[in-house]
Figure 1 (cartoon, one colour):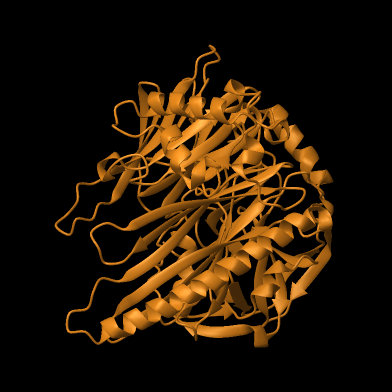
Figure 2: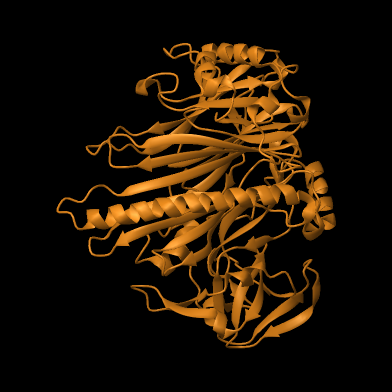
Length: 574
C-alpha cells in the first residue's frame, strides 16, 4: 500500500542509513477548511454535534471489537553495496478496546501473536544465514523478502474473521503467494472451523460450485467440491475461508483449481441464498456494515439496484506494461459493476463495500499524483463517485509506533481497519506551525458520506518546536474548554497534541531530556525530534496557540507576529 508515504518522513530522518523510506513531498492546498462544507446535510451536522458532546472514549463499551493491525518490519541493510540483503514483515492483531469486555478474544489474539513471533524468528535466522553467504558471493542474488498483508473481513459481536496474504521472494521466476485465514468467536476467543459454520455440507458445496461457474465460467478449473472432497479427507479443516457481512468466502491459491495462468480464485456463498445451510449464530445480523473487497482477485455479487438480482462487483488494478526487468507498476484502478466501469488514476488504492440504510456504496481510497490521498464515495447503483472529494483522508497508519535502530532497522506500524460503520479512525496531513499528521474518529453518515465524530485531530507525528520568546495562548482542558489566558515561556520545548487543522494547535510543554536536536542534510536550520513516543498519548490540559493565516496559506502569524520569529524547528514539507 502507498497511502501513508507522507508519514514516513519522520521515519526516514531517524533511519536514513538503514531504511529506504521516501520522504514525501506534499503540502495540503486546502487542508480541512472545507471539511464541514463536505458534510452531506444540515441534519447530519446536528447529529454529529450531539455525538461530539456526549462521547467519552475511555468509557465506551461496544459489542463490536475494533482490530488494529501491528505491522512488524525487519531487514538487513548492506551499507557497503547500499542494498537490502533481505526484508521481512509480519502482522500482529491488537484490540482498540482496553477493558475486560473482550478479554477472551484478546487472549486468543495474543496467543496468535506469540505464534507469529516464533515463526518469524526462525525465518529471520534462515534469511540471515542465506544473506551473509550471498553477500560474500561474486554474483549476489536478488534481495529476498517475505511480506504479510492482513485484511479484517468482519469484526462484530459474533465473529472476527481475518485473511493473511503472504508473498515470499526466493529469487525464482514467480514469488510464492499463499493465503491463510483465522476466524475467532468474539465471545469465547476460540477459533471457528468451517464445519462450525456449515450445517449442510452437501448443499453448501453445491452452492459453491454454482458460484464458481458464475464467477469463473471462462476458466478451465476444477470444481471446488471436487477439490474440497479430496482435501484433508473432505472434513473442511485446513481450508482458507473468511466470513463477511454477506456470506462466506473461499480462497483458492494458484494451482489449487487450475494451472498458473488461471491464477487464484475467491468464491463467496451468500447467507441470503443459504439461510438453512449456515449456523444462525454466525449469520450477520447487521443492517449497516462495511468490509474490504480485494483488488484483482475478489468478485462479489450484490443486489445494488434492489431488483432481486445480484450484480457482479469487483475492482481491478491497472498496470503499466512490464519494463525490461519484467516489473509492472500500478497506475490506476477500475471499479466494475455489471458491464459498467469507473476508472481512477493513482499509484495504489484499497476499497470497501459499504451498506448504509439499504443502499450499497464503495469507499475507494486512492493515492494520486503529488502524493495526495483521496477518499471517493461511489454509489454502486449509478456508479457515480461523490462530487465532493475528501482530500488527504486515509485510514490511520501510525508510521512509527516503535523502533530499534540497533537491530537492523526494525520498526512497527499501527494500521487502522474499517469494519464498523459507526467507528473508524482516519488521518489527514495539514500545515499548521509545521507539516503534521493527525487522526480522529469518523462514522458513515447519511447517503454513505463520512462524518467526523471528534472536534479535533490527535497529532500522531513527533513534532516538537522551541519557543524563541514568550507566547500568548489559552489554557484548555481535555474537552477543549478554555480555562483562561496563559503564557508559554521562551526557550520552552512544546509538543503538538491536538488541532482543528484550521486555526489552533494544542500543545504541552515537555522537558529537554525528551527531545533530540536534529539537522536536515543540506539545510541550515535545526529541528527537534521526540525521543519518548509515550508522550504522544497525553490526554490532559494543554496550551492552545491560535494561528491567523490571512493571505498566507503556509506560515501564518500568532498575535500578528510571523511564526518563524516565534518558533524554532518549523518544518514544512512541500
